[in-house]
Image (cartoon, rainbow, N blue to C red; front, side):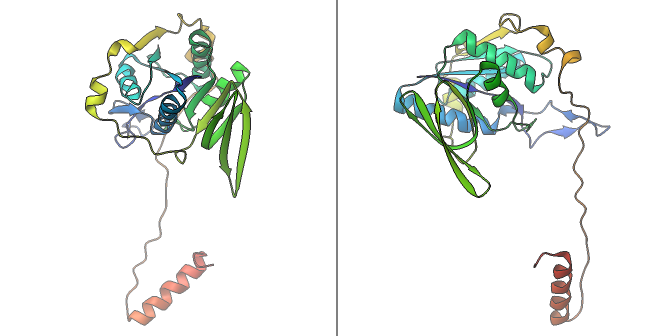
Length: 258
């Protein structure tokens, strides 16, 4: 079995700040592997150890993302392909690039991805990759097992648990419920040679400029602002019994106790 794992180089969301005008994210923060992709990497590592799968990583990002891919390879993988894009590309463009990598580095039996990315959080890329390749797609997997030429995937949808048997090749995105990613040490990352991360240009992959140029993007980020969360602040004073009675009354009116 040959597995392709999608990895995204993202800013550390605990360090991201808004610009002076409050309109766009300042992305010059420390960067890392997208947290949700760690679950996909852990699943791929398990398939490698248990089913002798060959694991290749792929992603799109600036040249500095190579260090992120070194960390991702420490989970267990043969090599990584980083498509260099110094400017942000929308989900449709990323999917075109990933599909091209899948076709040039394949054939693959399974493509794994985290359900969403921490920075964009739209969750579109895995499904768009599947659509481009014409493969079946299951989103939000909480478990996955390989059975010959198919995989059995379970996911939770509202109050129901759904189980799918999917013929390979297929694309599956995973949630953080599927596993607990192993801890990767600095020493493990340092032992990964940079030669295992191969950088390629979008032209090398044969991706048309219309797929990724800013002026032809299907989606454009126009603004980002902090979400407002208005809070009522009322200080109650008096005898304890009266304060409790007033508090309960306020909570009932707000529907908290209903």
